[in-house]
Image (tube, rainbow, N blue to C red):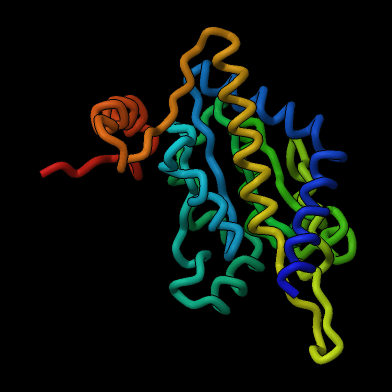
Length: 248
């Protein structure tokens, strides 16, 4: 099974490169433009999708102006089943989203593989109302196979400015075995992480080619990295409080 899984992931990455390259390029250009103009990159997801928002936050070799929109009841550690129930509630995003400053020069990524639940749709709608450019990472196959739970009838894919298809299967499972009754082997996290990191890598190149120094974290385990990172944190900590260093 391990070989089959790795081959499935490899195949999905090939599909992303083949079918989403233009969308990835546009996303990278939007990210570069945002950072050059003083914006930040914000990301939101519920359940396992929130993992992707943390994947690219405060990351060695990654961009500095990255802000995950984290709301613990929609994560997993306060009750996994409860988080799934809350994600399905219309207007539940009002409990947290207005606390997050979203500006017109920001980019907001909203991550939901099924794309059918109200909270990600509401976050996307709110960010667009604030004038941000909103990018959805979702599975079109999965979303179109299931009715929306949002009161508008919209899925994430028709609530954003740009859609990137992660090509995950319906149910987010790609493996089958005759001794197992249901499919297994989810792919959305590994594919989503690759999508985000590829976009940010291209954005870094775009900024550098324009003569703009990309704000990139150095690994804290490399010598002489502290001064470099602390200067960048100081620049962005007002808009990204999660970056604040508590130095005793």
